[in-house]
Length: 238
Image 1 (cartoon, rainbow, N blue to C red):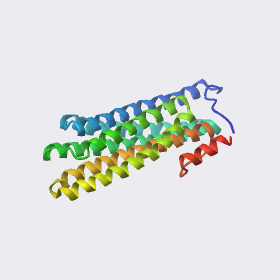
Image 2 (cartoon, helix red, strand yellow):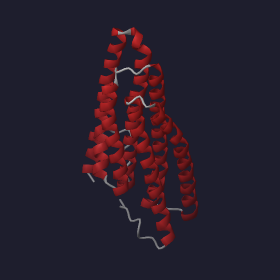
Image 3 (cartoon, rainbow, N blue to C red):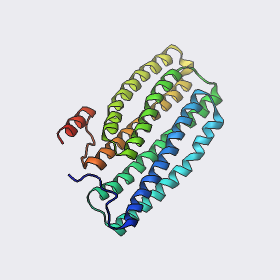
Image 4 (tube, rainbow, N blue to C red):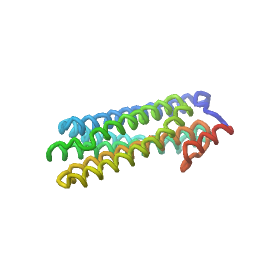
């Protein structure tokens, strides 16, 4: 299987096209990562102003997605890339989509923050949000780093963290159910926390997707729908 050789094209412009795609994707990733961090700060700190800023950023994220899709289409049409070059363009398209969806989930958390602020902040679930957010935010950071460095080991680390997020999310849901049974008056507020936790879990899923795309980019190996242990086994055989 061919490895990455993005700096070996006869056309200097082709190299620049690929580097530009990578650079813009990482810029978009940085915006979405900060959007996620701010959304969590907004809900924990009952900061509706910060939440509004998170929501406003989504228009920028959407524009970046459209722009990157257009540029990828142009590269495919003009350069007709093959092998690792084609994988790079395809991976950028897929990762861009996951980043945009991460932004959507961050926006949901921000909306929950505003609703909680307006209804009177409830402490139920904030510990769980803080705990799961710490893991998810690390996943987002690591998966972007894995793409920037073409680091399969880092991508595999992210894949392994996804199971931890799922376990923590399931535990948090049990806690939320207990809160609602003990105090029915808290149901509305706790439901907002539940939706925020769900959004965080989905951000983790998208980080996992990006990790899979990185492995495909570097190794040419499609590991979608595989567990972290299965991915590790496949990589060990190469």
